[in-house]
Picture 1 (tube, helix red, strand yellow):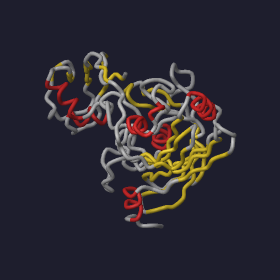
Picture 2 (cartoon, helix red, strand yellow):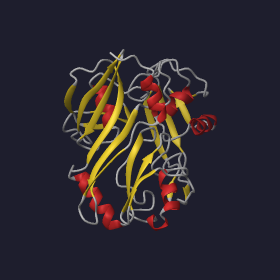
Picture 3 (cartoon, one colour):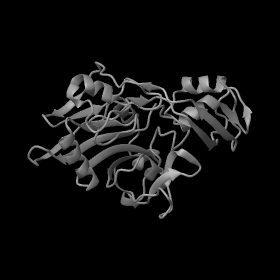
Picture 4 (tube, one colour):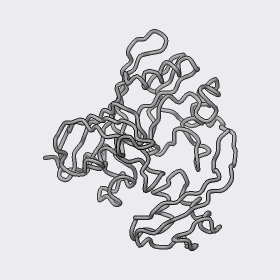
Length: 311
C-alpha cells in the first residue's frame, strides 16, 4: 500500500519572486503536481501570510506559506506494462537505465507510472521484497536524473547490495553540466548535508552536529570547458539525498536545469537537471564477481552538449 497524500501541515518561506503561486509550490514541493497544488489552493488549503490566495498570485518574496495536506489516501502498488531499458539481469538483480521524468517508487502525487510499477510487471516475484512501497529498490535516483539503477529480486540480494552501498564499496559515476568555469578543475567536496531549515522539503549543506546533518563527500573532475559551462564527472562517496545537486550549488557551480538548487531560469531551455548516472561498479550477490556497467548520455543531454561552444 502507498500513501498518495497524507495529513500534515507544511510551512515554508517563498522566495521565487515574480512566480505564480502554483508554479512556485510545484518547484519547492515537487512531490505534488501543479494540478494537485491548484486543487488544494481552490479548496482553501493554502494560505499566504495567513490569507487565502489564488493560484495566479505573484510572489513578492519573503511571504510565509502554509499548506494543509489532506488525509491519507491508500492505493495498491500495481504492475504496469511500461517498457524498460534493461542493461543487466540475472536471478538476483536487474539494472535499468532509467529515463528522465520517471519516479523510482510510488509516493506523494505519483501513484503509478513509476519504475517500481514497471519492475513488478517484468518481475512479478519482486512484490514484497524489502517492503510494499519500494519492492526491490536498492538505491535511489531523482525523478529527473537519468541513468543506471539497481533493483534486487529477493531479500538476500537486497541485503547484499544495500550493504555494499552502506560500506561505500559501490563506485558511482555521474555526468553533469554545471554553470560557470569550474575551478579548481578537480577536488573533493566534504560538506555535511541535512534538511534545509528554511524549507524542510529541500536539502542543504548544514552545520556538523545539527539534528539531521550527515557527512557527505563528492569528488568531481572537469571533463570539458565551454563558454559559460563545464562538463563534469562526479563521484559521490556517500549517498545523501540530492547530494551532487546540493554540493555543486554549494561551491557556486549549480547544475544546469536544476531549478530547485540552481538558477530559476536557464537559457539552454533544458526541462530537467543535466545529471546522468553513467556508471555503476558493484559485486554480484551470487559469486562476488565485480560487475561494471555504463551508459552514455541520453538524447536530450547530448543535444544540449552539442550546441555549446568548446573552449
